[in-house]
Amino acid sequence: MNQQELTLDLKNLSIHQTKEFNECVIKHRKDFDQMLCKLAKQKNLHTDIFFTSIFSREPEFSPLYERCCKLSFIKKQVDSGLVQKVIVDEIELFEVLKKSEICKKSGLIIHCNENRLRNFSKKFLPFRSFLRSLCFVVFMLLARRNGKIDHLNKKKIILFSTNILKGYISKNLDSEYSDRNFPDINDFISEEQKERLVFLPQFPGGPRPYNKIFERLRKQKQSFLIKADFFKLKDYVYAFSYPFRIDIKMINDVKFLDFDITGLILREYWQTTFDFKIIESLLNCIISKRLRQRGIKINVLIDWYENQLSSKGLIHGFKHNSPNTKIIGYCGIIDSASYRVNLHPSEYEYDQMLLPNQITVLGEDTKDDFMEFTKNLNIISAPSLRYKYLHQIERSNSKTSEFTILVALPIFKDQAENILSILAESKASLEKIDNIRVNIKVHPTQSSEIYQSLYDVESKNCKFVDGDFLEWVKAADLLVSAASTTCMEALAIGVPVAIIGAKNQILQNPIPKSIHHDYWRICYSSSELIGFVSAVYEIDKDNLTIESEKIRDSYFMLPTNKNIQKLINFQ
Image: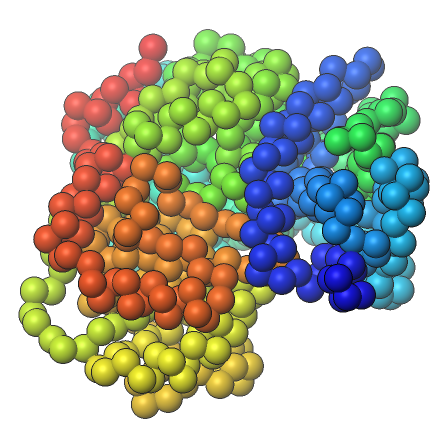
């Protein structure tokens, strides 16, 4: 071995090392879950700690899962005698490794190349979060109104908790409200149920002025409960004072694969203190109490469910303040649980009353996956309101000699750049294929200009395109993308999928194992992508059509009056 092979740089893994890293991720998922379950049972932990990043398991919010995955990979490399030096880019990992007996006994050299400015800036994260969350409170107070709710007081409300993305209301201002997550729900319920159906909107993406958004919602024919109209000033004070209720010093001796990660957890707790997601979740714990005090009876709560902190707050609050309310967690997407480990509920969440009475998922085959960490779940498959269009779509039958690749860039910039870098490496090989066309579609919230100057991918047959994603994917022969339900949508339409794996990162693969591997592939390099393009050329179109019909029927159940009634009348 040369010196380069004996050095493990976590920011510069080879493709082979990245694949080995992801093998460790899969192998030690339950070890991570068991570590949190054991931590949850430590004495004198205040309930509020379960609404902090430590127990969120949300990788976009908490780095704990990814850091533990890296520790498992380092341990494997050290135990195999494959490395003598490890380079990390986080002081938190450096300190864990430096103190570990595993590294001391092996004589491992540990180097941290984290930028000093970045390390220094982490110290101020709580202050930044405090100001950001304070802005949220100010925006909520300014947008508060004492609206009339008498028409809801004597009804048994069917409450749908949903996410409204930035810009969604303004785009649909002139038309009757149709929810993004529960579209056309009124088509499947009775007139009496329509009178009882109310939406509880959540606004992901952080604080912003809410005056105009709330006013537009209040003017809609559809009924909404705006949380700001019910919260009191003392509720915001209560949420902000949670660090004084949690005695973080009670956490001690936390082990993951023989590594003492107590310091890792304590530092993360400090760095995410006062984060907007925590404040929002604690306020969500209170909303059920405020609704009850105003005489609003919630018969059924149907939450758009991705097992995030905001949902946990709602569920926990309703279980304590409105125990007769039936709570359904409607998981209406198929996402990558290999990365978003929080999608699969844990035993400690069951113990802490953070889980709904029933979880509904897309597809029978995903039910067992959801019970990866706990069997204490009432889980059923449910109709797919958001993707019902897949049963109505028809692909173009016009024969063309062109082979069209659609590259769908995800919202996260690092993932998008990784896809474009592999596309740039593949450019010369792709251009040798006759009649090939590559269309690049950026995420709807972004502009193509931010990527056009970064990579030399555009040519006569490779262009950035605008317009509706559905129309582009219908005309495609192959979709190239990363983790999202988009990949499953394409397969359901009959379009094979290449998922681009990012080096140095946890693989994000939303495609269930039951789907035939001929129709999708994970590609880490240009050679793997070109190889799959060649394989797609040889796919039997009739078999692909049959497989796509199976996917639609198995994972995107068509909504009907009967199955929607079963959903909202859960006993």
